[in-house]
Image (cartoon, rainbow, N blue to C red):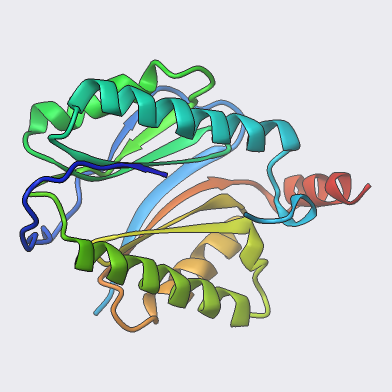
Length: 211
């Protein structure tokens, strides 16, 4: 889900390193945010509770409204919520605007954590966003082909050829998913934004959703 403005399209330069900002505290699962340099799911396959899924939808809708109220037509910010962890991507004109985007969404009810990956640069072009959509599709296909992963438990977000992976996974799954995504042609970098659980915790989550 995204909030966009018709700022003059211009080829955006991708910085060599992304500055990740994590706001607020986490309770329960540990949040993993990491990077590796490289060259609607059905309820029974989703590891979130039904309540968390509804909360995520509400967070995205309210977040878009808050961003629209904050920036009007002078920024392009995407908001993705998974298990109440909010990922912000896109582009804004200044560092102050980047902080402002996080502050606006932080006030939305049920937001647990914000990972602010908004770039300070000109708004991306339609062509760039279309290419990102296609790249997300390719990454999802690779995850499905990896038989040792539950691809439906992993959400893929792509911005300027940087792939963000979200979901409730074990450390093994996180590392494996990042490795698989990094092998997709066109992916510049993989950023992991996972809720990490132990194998025992995962075994407790999955059976509950099969009842």
